[in-house]
Amino acid sequence: MSWTENVEGVTEIFFWYLLGSVPAFDSHVSGAAPLAYGENTFSGILNFFYRITGDELISPIQDWVLVPFPINVYTGIHPLYKDFGVAGVIFGVFAIGSITSYLYLQARLGKRFYVYLYALSLFPLLFVTFSDQYFAPVLSWIKYVMAGCAYFYFFREKNSTGRQLA
Image 1 (tube, rainbow, N blue to C red):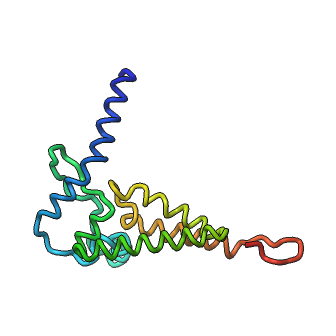
Image 2: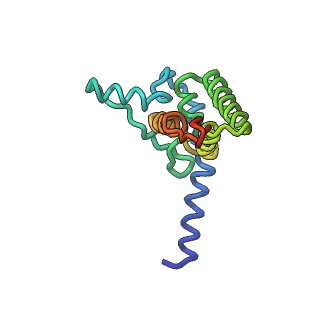
Image 3: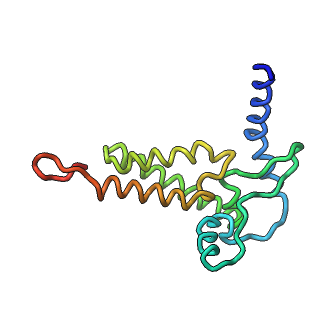
């Protein structure tokens, strides 16, 4: 395969994901599906308990939508909308924005733990338009925060005077 064919293929897939998520989400908004009340937003946490109890797991894979090419709806607001409607999207995006702003302000003060958390928060913010990186991997985010707590609070180094380094 030539370099030109590779570039054309990558460009086509890039634009599918860049432009396809919004019309695919619109197809869900246009439908009258009942609200799921947390089944999509908290599926990672629910599946953790379903594995313990042996209940059927919630599939993280969304249905295909034709827009006119087939694509999955992986926008960041999709789980919020499916679970809680427009009010859930407004509240959820407000909460995400507030948390990210708080982390930024704390990181600006030079607090190393908050610099770490703010850096973590930039990844899902970058992909929120065409990928659900806030809610689908929530158990991973919990692990990352716990690892940061362990590193920054429990395993802090002491300086020569015996005081904890921040």
